[in-house]
Amino acid sequence: MLLYKQKKNPVPKGNRFLISITVLGSAGPIRFVVNEEELVAAVIDTALKSYAREGRLPILGSDLNGFLLYCSNAGTGALSPWDTIGSHGVRNFMLCKKPQTEKLEDAGRLDTAITRRGSGGWKTWLNKSLNLKISSH
Image (cartoon, rainbow, N blue to C red; front, side, top):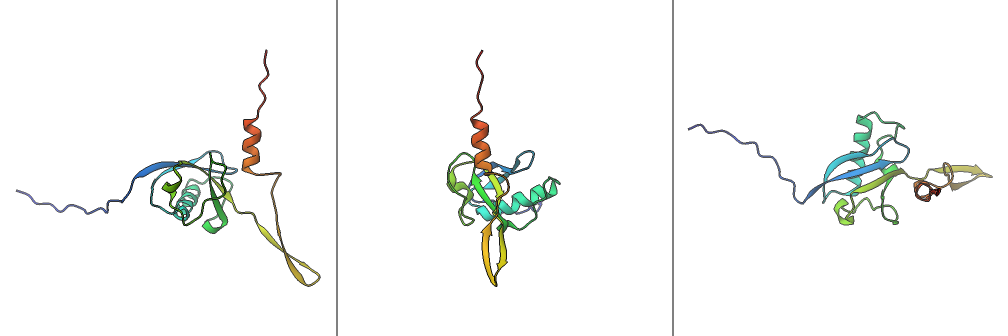
């Protein structure tokens, strides 16, 4: 009788499920399996690494603090980085860059202004695309 040594792989606790993260400005979503107990911050980090590994454009960088994760089908704000990804009950997400702040020097003092690219954001784009008019015959 042969004895063999089994590898002890740590079994992840909790359920695992497939999520889809659409990056604003990118061609298509990133899909990967996560544990429902993972923090939103860890999911953002994994998404940024997958995005970079696939060589997608535009180049985002790797600082997870510069991004926000939203539920795609819910009208809520950004998810907290300390929430667990499974607590929201959704599997489709939108990853967006945080609004940039500029420091302006005007008469010896620093002011902070939030800059916006384009008019609106992904929510505006989504509303416009869903409100397409269908012409009748």
